[in-house]
Length: 597
Image 1 (cartoon, rainbow, N blue to C red):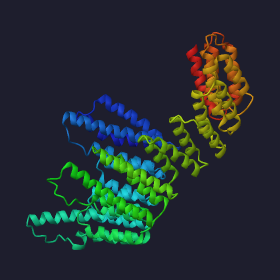
Image 2 (image 1 turned 45 degrees about the horizontal axis):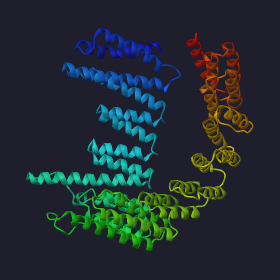
Image 3 (image 1 turned 120 degrees about the vertical axis):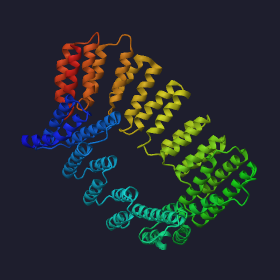
């Protein structure tokens, strides 16, 4: 091992001598580099290799490269790069190869090597990295796409990119993203060739050996890819994705037409198809002259476009009467309503249209739970309070077991100061299952605190403890404790705490809250704090290393504390704590002792 390290350090000497000779590093700095390199080399030559050692070594070399780059810029010296930088770059590539060879599954390590190659423009090396990476991880389409994009955009090799996409599709014959990016690549290649041909023609140069086949220039390769993909990948979503890519290129009108016709023929029942067809109406060019278009004419034009969209949506919900289709229609209306406009008339028209579509979907019983919430919010924002109350009630009737829907209805009633809030809470608790009802109980007690008498609120807290599940009751205990202290003072909260301690389960915060309350008292008694800590440790002593430490701190800092108790508490903690918590506790306890002494 020592011989190998010595050999590697000797290999560095020529580059280090050059660094000193050209004035980039001082003799002292060269010695520091050798010391650090030696330490790093020994770590990666051990029998039990650690990934962190390789990462640290690579990071050190990268930092060294950056430092050399800055110093070159400062002194204006740009020679001897072969002897200096290339030597370091070669070493980093070797380190990455060893690391990725040992930890083949670590994608992040591979991607770090890719990023390094890109940063230092190591094109030849990056091709080899991608080749090795894809041989080991052929099951990840994103890596194939990354490699193909690099070949196309950086190396300007459409042939290599095409080859990679074809290999990728053998592994993933039904991956939409692969087909989309392959489709995009072929269109980019066609556009590039069209531009080249145009430049040659403008310069009146003889094209000679340059060949620009008409089918390539017209995007025929992309059409073949699309047709092949359309046989394997079902659904309107893929068609719409390739259509949006095709629209980025101005020579694809025929291709766009073919995709659109296929979409309408094969997926006439898909809400996404109708959604696209409706929204197209917004893009239709105005027939009016743009030069003399007034502000009012623009508003009229926009109103007409939106009405044409809605006409298509109306046809859609008739042809495909589903929840998803109504959702598309409503989403469109809400988007238009949220758009900024200085025209109050247009804003009002959009609001009326949106509310009307919500109502129609509700009447058809095809409005989802999430959209009811959106509808209520819209009605509240537009001050239609009575209607908001009606809609919230209808939603809770339709989704009677949903905690979120009842919560929404109750919040509306509370906001509007309704007289029937208590009755509605009772109805909600009756309908929903006790599991998950915690948000309703917390909302109820919060409302009661600001509305009802202390006696009624306390009775409600007591009732909630019986009604909530064991997993949720600790939260109610915390809230009850906090409320009691705020409204009944210390004596009352101590009494409630004692009574609550008779019924498990508890949360750690329940005990912490009582400890904090005790510490707020002018006559804070260590006797009481011990009682609370001991109760907490009976429940959480095996998992709460911080709790033991807080207890020890209290004995050390409280005027009535007994530092001599710390040894006993430490001994008990060591017995009760589980696994890694013991080590964590010991290190923190040692620091605590050192700080106290």
